[in-house]
Image (cartoon, rainbow, N blue to C red):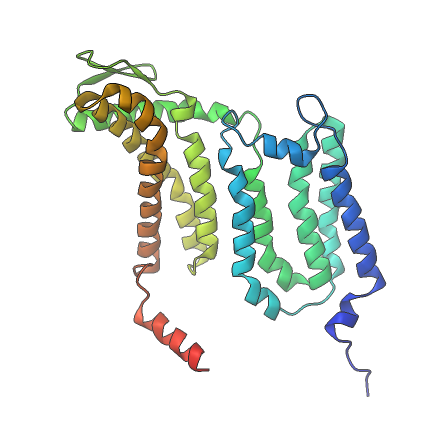
Length: 315
């Protein structure tokens, strides 16, 4: 008769696992906490640089939302992770190779983005090695989701095209409401001179809103029960929704300036319309697209799902 299999505690509390944990802790602490290499004066570590980069200049003000979303996705998958078959798998250490290459390259060229980009690979490789491929598969998307909070270099160059689209949509929308306007570059002007020109600057192009909405749609698609191709459709639908939502927002500013208080429209409504107008429209649009892809209203579970829930509770 063969020897009995060791239990989970005996299987994971082995010398290789302990060594891996120690090496991983050093690998994480040194470049991310104890190595001031980055920042404007070279006094910040990579985590400090990342937090400071979530600002209006980079259009990544939404970056701070990524960590709680990752925590929620892992919490949502906790039962599947607990039920997954666990075993040590040396293949997980393969992910440490590109992670180490990114770390070495980042310090060579002074790019903190590469250092931060290596972090999900280290965590994913460690979970794969210690708990096996099933657990790594469940943790892969939440951990790699962290990449969405890393500002891309020269990202603001993409705002030029969005500025032109937003200006044209604002002009078209104003025309539908009877507001006579004309365009001058990225400026929307009143033909009758009733209000000062609205300049659709880079911040008003919708890039910030687009990145935030892409982040939300990615998490939404991951948590949904849709097929893979439908998840991709739901994720990509954030792009036209963001463009349309921003066009409607700009239209509302122009219309309010024409028929209401121009100063209120240019300042107060401009600052708050994104939160009060843009995101509700886009989130409702995502809910509608999700319902169309699922073939049922997502806020009203079908009878089949209710029956499955009752059966599971009875068991």
